[in-house]
Length: 172
Ligand SMILES: [Fe+2]
Ligand SMILES: [Fe+2]
Image 1 (tube, helix red, strand yellow):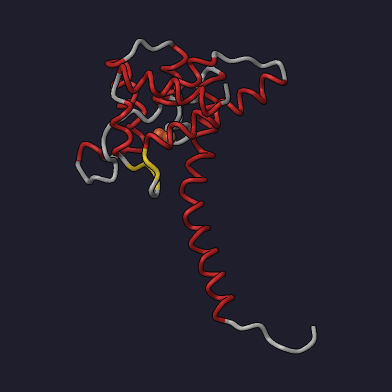
Image 2 (image 1 turned 180 degrees about the vertical axis):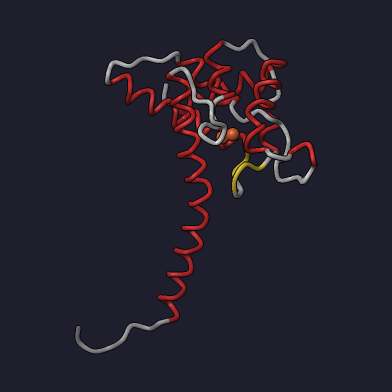
């Protein structure tokens, strides 16, 4: 089973037993839903864990994937200017943990993954390997999700610019 199928299978279970499906309706970055974001973070985390396994460093795979899928389980639209969403960046790991505790039986590693993923913005570091992996994978995915659309716009502009500027004749 590949990483994508592994994550999809865990996500389907969390969707069946809890409220992960609601994350399809909330936007995380650009036009990426929270659901697609957490799936990307889980897949990236698995790839990082596979690389570490080649160095002999093992992780609790289920806690890694489930924690990654639940790390942004805050279940609201953080773009909505409701006062309860103030300081979203600092507070959402705690909202995510409270929601996940309500819906699932979490392992201590899953709790650590969820509540520590915003380090260093929330200045309490992860305390297990799984939480460090998700913390790093989350930053990488967030960067890709926010930068990629801008790069596409820039690339489009460059391509249009080239079309508008005819090649100069003459020898090079
Ligand atoms: Fe987050
Ligand atoms: Fe995230």
